[in-house]
Length: 592
Ligand code: FAD
Ligand code: MLT
Ligand code: ZN
Image (cartoon, rainbow, N blue to C red):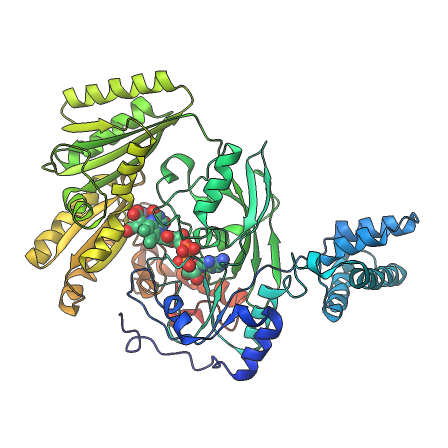
């Protein structure tokens, strides 16, 4: 495990969990959703790579979030009441969505009154509202049978909000956790932070078949969303090897890239709306389902990729593309990296309108998969090639596209760009090809210790780093390169029998300096988490220099905004006590 105790101090301002806290959480969540049994906490305290281990004593599993009464609902109630039609039961059913804890609802209605105070103050109006709401409360208790209520539950609606509000008031640090598949130590506690696990927030709220817009809770597992959409004739715009465990809230919070970004773009483009609970428990409702909305600052983007440091994502609205009927996948071999690059360029030019994925792995990566992954088989007769490409096309005209792809492959083979290759003949063969590419991280884990780097670099330079690293480390390590070539995203992984500080000292800071020198990013898609919180300066303006290169101009630092400082200000604005995912994303000295 990475020992953080020597490098990071537990923030002394944070409280430790007391038995009163546990009782309070049980009141909010019910007994079974408050987990403090040590054995059950073992998995939640450890990350997927088994590299980071926290010592949290408590995991909370909320089930839903507060549904604020929208002004339009209130207006509807008032209209209803004034026109003399007040079907109590209907109102009660509507109201159960709000909250059935009397006191909180009353407080909420006062809040609401304050919220509508932009309207001319009108005490009569407020009195009518309160009266109607009280009536509604009465109705909800009288007419809603508790089994049906169970869907939302007496205590379910306010949970995330109430938990955060309480943690903030007690200065209890929290770590939001989805599927815990993150690769930078962001999803596990560093010390004793309370784990807020979203696995039980897994409802699909709505799907619009015309627009393809899906609204769901943050804890929906990506693969479940894929299956749901498949039945509707749609696909998710993102796909990754961790789809069986990762959750959409985690995907949004890491701005996960994956295998389809090349065609469908990043989550910054596909996520249309978010509901987020802030550190103080207030709900930021940005859950829009509009493709276009230029009404001021688009705040949802702050939360996409913020790795749980600014708020807990509770609901997501996402644009999903229709499922097209014709998908082809080729597994190709190239003799050198230069051929891979040329092939990418040619494919973009000749197959651009149907090209949907362009992934690569080197021979070291393939060897690891063949050695460690059950059922993995090389689709080609030999593994004597240096590089392998997975090239996928997706469209709606099967015969035309297949013919076009085959002609392209033949031409590329004759021209020497491809040394060998095979086209998947059916869906099973296609998934066995994907199994090879998606299986590289798991194969690496089985091989021993892994030093994992996720870099954005100019495509022509990308593999130079792998080769330099091989020379640098010699036979002590197996240096492996794979990734999303179509997105210029290299996964440089260094596999050794066990973690060794001497090897780490050979890798870092060299790998970050190299990336910075080539104007790359030290985190293309995995985020910064704990692993790279203090490395952010390699990708954002360095603090130490007095002159900064802006485009082709040299500007004195005093004229430039320090981006990391600005990020820290935003963090402090939204989370003044710094309780949300501390020690992650930003260097701790800046975040609190
Ligand atoms: P977690 O790991 O639980 O959390 C990740 C981060 O998000 C943490 O900082 C956590 O605090 C925060 N978080 C989680 N849920 C919420 C929430 N609801 N609100 C606020 N913050 C939250 N990543 C890629 O980008 N591309 C890939 O191709 C890819 N492939 C992978 C393949 C494998 C085999 C594995 C193990 C991982 C892969 N990943 C990939 C990394 C990982 O799967 C993604 O980062 C994923 O999006 C994390 O989702 P999760 O639900 O597991 O989140
Ligand atoms: C991948 O592309 O396979 C993932 O990002 C995981 C990894 O980098 O190992
Ligand atoms: Zn990746």
